[in-house]
Image (cartoon, rainbow, N blue to C red):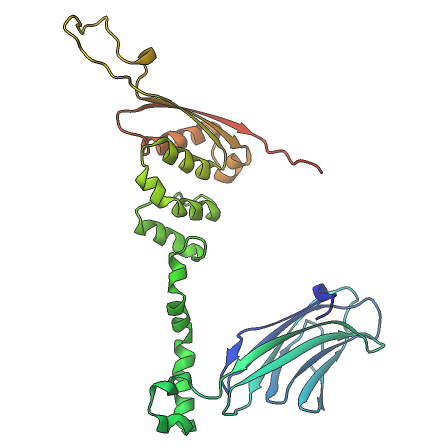
Length: 321
C-alpha cells in the first residue's frame, strides 16, 4: 500500500466464502493526471471473473486478462475512455473454483503509470473454507465426504447471518454499539421515555445514564444530568429547602403566620442556557421549547416541589486559531 492511498481503494462484499460461491470486489480510483496510466487487478487463478460493472460509457470489451504464473491479471487502460482527475467505481464478480482445503485468497488492485511505476495499490484477503464447519459435529468418518461437506455448506451460508447476530448479541444491549433502530426498543426495556426528535447520540447518552437517573430520581444530580444531555446546554439549579419547624407551647398557627424561608419552601429555580441551533433542530419556538422543559421537569421533581424555569438561547461562536 503506497502513500497515494486516497486515489485507490478496494473492498470485498465478504471476507470469507465457500468453494463455488460468488465474491464481489468494489474498486474506487481516481485517474492520474499523466497519460498512459492503467488499472491492474491481480487475483489467484482459483478465482474466475464472471462479470464487470464498468462506469457508464466504458466498453465491456476494454478489460484484458493475462496469466502471469499462478495469477490472473485484469488490465484496464485509462487513456482513452477515462477523464483525468475523475473518480470511477468498478465492480468485479468472481466465482471461487472448488478445492477442499482452507485457503486465503489475496487480490490486489494497482494504479500503474506509463513508466510502470506503482502510483497506488491496495489489497484484500478473502478466507475460503474448503470444508463445512459443521463437519466437526459429525462422526469422523464424514470428514472426507465431499458431498456431505458441500451439503452442510448450504446450511452454513443460509444461517451465517443469524449465527453472526447470535455471536454478537451482547452488542445489542450496549447503548454505544446497538443499531439506531434498536435504541427505542432498548429504552423500553428499562422504562426510559425517549423523545424521538432527539439526535441519536443524545438518546444513547440518556440510556447510558438510565441507572443513575432512576436511582437518583427527584434529586439535583439526576435533574441536572438529564437536562444537560437533553438540551446540550448549560444547567443552573437553585434549590430552596424547607427548614425544620417545631411548634412550642406558646406558638400558634393562623392567617398571619407563614412557613418556610421567603415563603418559598421546597422550590426549585432552573436556568437553562441552550445553543440557538437547538431551536432549529427541534423546530420549536422559544416559548414552545420552554413549555417542553416544564413538561419534562414536572416528571422529574417530587410532587410537592414548586419549580420555575427560564430558558435563554445563545448562538454558538466558532473560535479562531
